[in-house]
Amino acid sequence: MTMNLITGKAGAPHITSSDQGAMQAGLVGNGNYLLQGSDGKFPAVTMQSANKALIPVLNLVIEGRYARVTAAETVTIESGVTGRNRNDLICVKYTRDSNNIETIALAVLKGTATSGTAADPTVPSGSILNNSGTVWIPIARIPISGITAGTPVMLVKQLPPMSQLWDSVTLYNAKGFTIIRTGMMMLIKYAGSFAGDSWSSVQCDYTLPVELRPPIEVNAMVCVSNGQVSRMLIVNPNGTIRCANMGATGSNQSCVGSLCYPIP
Image (cartoon, rainbow, N blue to C red; front, side, top):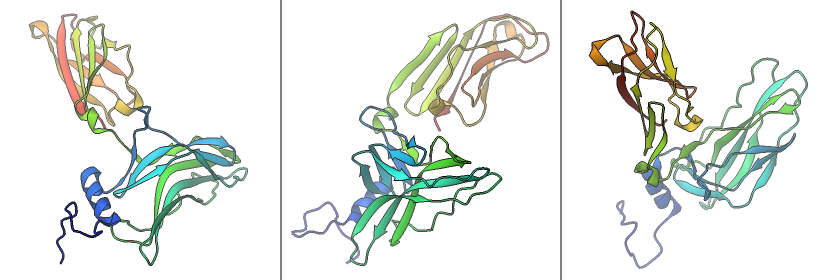
């Protein structure tokens, strides 16, 4: 029988980790995701010392499997070499044995030292959903320059909680600028006036935090009273926001414009 009622009573044990993993992967995605912590923040790997990376308490969904680091632990990073650069990857190593017993552990994939720009080591192919015996899931990169280990870079995607899909928060509302996050969308509005020179602009005092910035410049045309001059509302990937005249004669007339974009 190839069709099973997974969440129905069968009178005998019949639900497997593959069943649960397939359902969770279908709900959240087939990839690897970092869940928000109990403090509302996404935890990150840090360097405890020159040779020890600290993995904090965290929750992961890896190809549908739910995994936890229940107490902070360290992994060893091999010392670098003066004049050479290297990238190491901190990974979750998943293993399935011949009896279908599944285990995970933290492990390090060591990169190759080079005098130029370091590249990440090759991650062995494998997929939990395809029943591979061993799967490596990178969660952080450790850049090593000479003998110095740099700040870890998180590689696993952040998965916001479902509550954020309908949360609405006004982040800033002053000097003509209004900035609102609604779920996974950003709404930005400008209503006001400023100097009338050809390329005059006004910049918002609020800078968007990294997690709310667009990956590319986002802009929209702004309506100016009495039909004068072109004006644009601009949101930059560095988090700055401004409204600007776009040449010609300029105008100091009042204006209003808005734009929205999905949070990456």
